[in-house]
Image 1: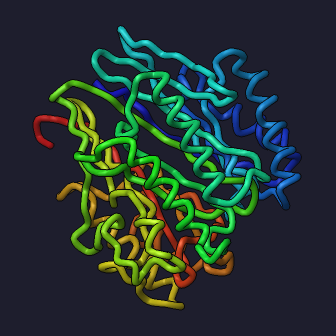
Image 2 (image 1 turned 45 degrees about the vertical axis):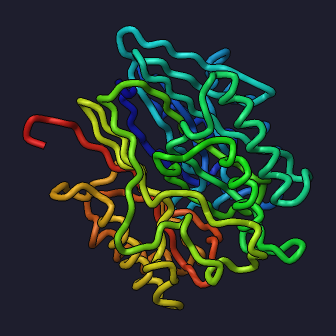
Length: 370
């Protein structure tokens, strides 16, 4: 059986960094277990990012003692408030084995429920640790070590978030995003992906080095579905032609992810929706028109949901390239998804012409009438 998880988002207004972190942590409901914490903030440079990350680590150690959950600090400016916390919570179930662990300085969580094993972690490297390819290679080596320690294969990853500094910049003639894709492809070569790749987001950050967050699941239960979801409006990203891969020297490979991924057991269905933009087929659409790009993006996302279900998302993040587009996109999104409360952050995207990207988490309870 899958662990019952739910996401909540809290926003802090401008204040001292420690005070904002403390305020956000105080909002987490008592009696709930924390699977992961993701903070979105606006450090001015790598030095401030490193300082704030250390402060955050010390604060979490004081709050959670020996049970610090996996956490991330993402350098993406919040467009509502000054610091955002996305928390993944869960309730302990009978017979469940829950372990907060560390390995080589990286925190991770394992949850074993019957014949289902779940793992959550976030791994990064130092800012001065080389090119994007070198940074990503190091990150994936550490993730592989954690998975191997728990006897989980690489292809157990179901959801992955990839944060890349200067994502559309170049080094050695190859775009940083495609350097990352090469490192990811080499990592994924350690396994066969007969059941499809993870759902994933690849997005820019303004400080810090490459960071990767993952959720992984291993189960022998035939009652648990774990399947890739394609979008008939889009070419699967892992099948892109070299024509749309800027700066690709034909050795970096395609982005290895699915448009979405479905997890379902007897009680709950979950769709992890990958980072999605205004791409039809494999081409970017509506260049220069953020409202139309946002509309097409939402249309792409709604096309991934189960038929007949209301579009109410448990978690929804909107990444904007330009802050001045916030009002336009918010008005459009509020009109199409009135019951969803998105998080808005400022971030560079993997293609120069794209102005907005979105991702989401959609859950529903299984019933005899569903």
